[in-house]
Length: 142
Image 1 (cartoon, rainbow, N blue to C red):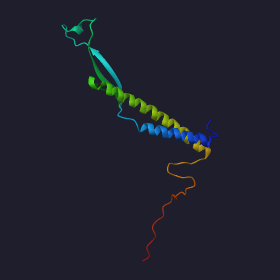
Image 2: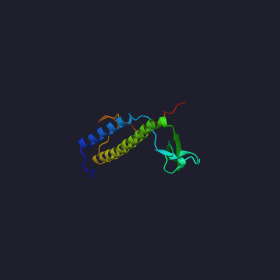
Image 3: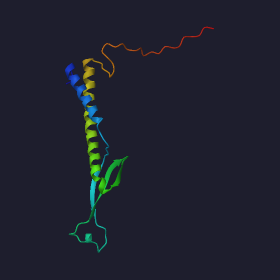
Image 4: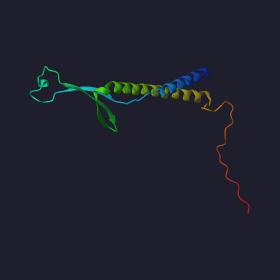
């Protein structure tokens, strides 16, 4: 599938990779998890919520996420719900951008390998390469 990848195709992949990097740089505050509004009945027999047809108390907002195999729950104040939704949306945007960046880099690396082209950032075509061997210091003559 990647055999015979053209220079133009490689350049397109590099351009898309650079676009994704730029978009990642615009990511603002983010957090992962699910925001849930819950309604609860307090259990007091004289409260309005005790009647089945009445509305329960709430919503009370909580953010849940998995961390090291456990579910972590944080209570979110009502005034922070909209900001939390924005942060969760930024996290989803981050995940999508990184997924695509990884996919583009995989295709780019495969294409460069198959085309026999070597590229690295900052390196120019035809630049000399340094020797990988280190030289030992000269011996003193006493």
